[in-house]
Image (tube, rainbow, N blue to C red; front, side, top):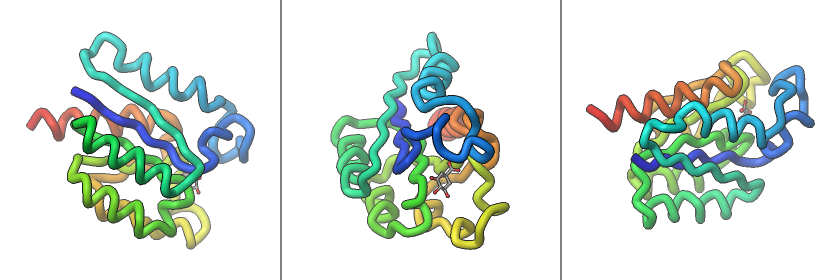
Length: 145
Ligand code: DQA
């Protein structure tokens, strides 16, 4: 099973940005945490990050050509703006789970709307880095059906 984790803008600034919301841990450590959790499970997990919307679309299209089985996406602020990312997720037809470190529904009103979630099989938010693990487990359960 081949799973892509794609993180959007400013997520590379974990451990620097708004630590009270996103935690103390830096981006590299969060990536290692995700990979370590599934080490030895016979699942290939590749993690990507971009601050650029079009680049995220290129990466999603690569998931199609490289035959990924599932995607976990944290689109960052593009969640609340990007019809292009919605279209990209719909286009590639690969089961995708949206994840947010923070509980977007508990925050500013502009974060309550997700343009991308309707293209996904589910959304997880509010559990910090653990959300990535739940999202991957959800994908595995979905793909094993
Ligand atoms: C985020 C939530 C978004 O609203 C915000 O713009 C982010 C991070 C999260 O993981 O909680 O950049 O996606």
